[in-house]
Image (cartoon, rainbow, N blue to C red; front, top):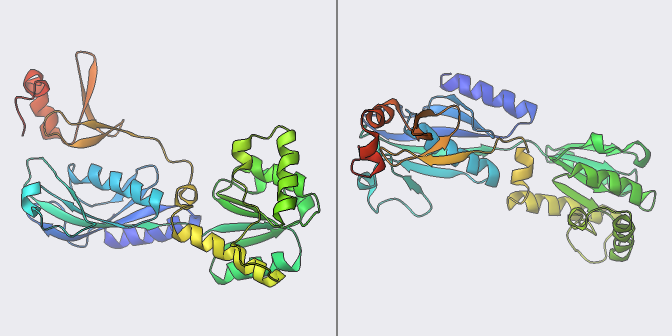
Length: 312
């Protein structure tokens, strides 16, 4: 993908509601295979689409991008040897040494692109309608569902669910909602009513760890409020949690593939240990490498690198 194809693909992912990170090279120092303005998309499971640099830069960018998706906070990376940057890196900028043969360096800006929140309001009260309308003004997807029609299959781990049934089968709706483990689950009602509902569900055998995730009452505490103000308080809490990154991991999706890291025995770089990384077995142990040069050097003399007697 070239730069503009990356942007087109980013729009497609956003339309599908998938979280990803957009990485852009904002500065380079030759020799480097990347160019200023080069872009790449990194998905939550670590797939890279586009071009951000060679075999040494990609693993570092992918690791950082997955962290950016999980936290929802952008990050600026300086990739190169520590001597190239010294102590000049601004506060908050991550310096990642690259110990490969190339003497190039990159500055990469990585920003999260999170899916639009999906809010499901269960109930048909005026407050529920107001809440859905307010969420839509923020560009969120908002749905109103009757209590009798709500099922756990209607939501997933990226959904935000507000139970506003106001006494109409609160227990049954909440039990079904808990089973879906949404990113946010709130019950509209007093603390006394909430305690009774949660107590009933605990007696039915629902795990306390799951019930503790239910926010009762839903929304910020604004004191004595009207129904429209309750809707504002609930939406304000959701916005606050999202802005603080408290929902970022859940909204990014629960399908991210876990990954482990390994140290390249030749250059000392941290690389992803997995099928997509260059590897070599030696005496029953699998070693992973950042590039073909490191793999070739290790293959010629494994003992030297395993004893720490050589570094490229």
